[in-house]
Image (cartoon, rainbow, N blue to C red; front, side, top):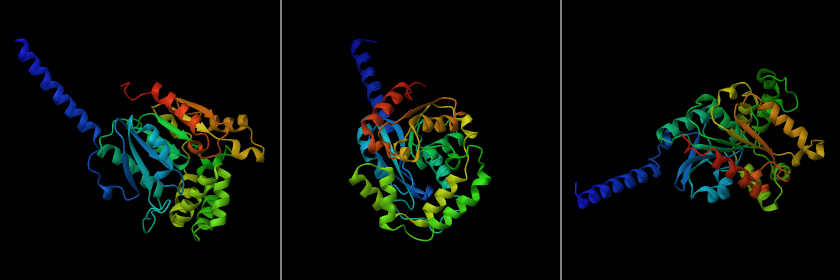
Length: 306
């Protein structure tokens, strides 16, 4: 083969390769009917990243995180039905969070996302763990933001899921009685967030959320114990914890870290870091620390290491 023919062949290969990369970076046509429990917004290009918000928050809670990562990652931003003004499902499923879990896994397969990074805050962190226990090989590295495998056992580690049901049922009924008052929602937000503008935003989302959905989601999370199941998780996990919101109640950084370590004991590859300043919304309260921790973790555990 002469030089001209070789160059032509190389050019063809490069063109085809670039087309393959373009196809891989372009999300496939979504089928919203296949996942009625949530909607998805896609931003950026690169390796796939799924971002799941916490209770009552829509995907917009991740706006700054998406802006930080969208040049490196194709961000799939999740908004759960009934949260933060999103239309609710009617009637609300009695297995709402399990439906979310199963539909998210189906979405990953339908979009052919290869081991996506999953970033989850609070309920979203719990969902990331649950997805990973259900299909350990489908998910990539996890970034868990102030979440635990079994929320109900914070004060009593020996508590079982069955023992938690009466309390969870009472909480569900109380939440489903009607929309939270503006004053009550703001008081709750102020306990979890430091910045006044952020408190106002979270308050609006809380008041706009569907009470039946919120109550069911809390019930599902409060009666699902993943502490043993996380032993099946195969990917590394960064767990970012908060304690500042609870120091007025006697909690210390060390005592709160001990709770995290105890609940994550069975998780094979995990690393816990505690924020000094953040309350619950660490990506808002301690933004630079959050990005520094997540950046270092993702660089070390890039899905490129196949």
